Image (spheres, rainbow, N blue to C red):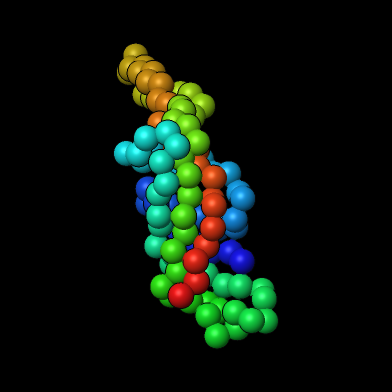
Length: 103
């Protein structure tokens, strides 16, 4: 069973048991979060009627909050003596997908 969810302006292909790093969520560590699936499917014969269900929900558990790798943004204009350097670290939330509910 798998699904596609959208969070933080990005789409993720998820399966139960998978650990993902997504944009920071306003949830505490250990909290359960639910995402509406954009698309979902099951590989089992008994779920053929629910296959590609538009109303699926994905339940996940927040593992921790962290920061991503540092990205250096460097700007320079030649012959103008202009240089600017900025660093950025994106705040992320690590989640574990618990289950995908078709229906």
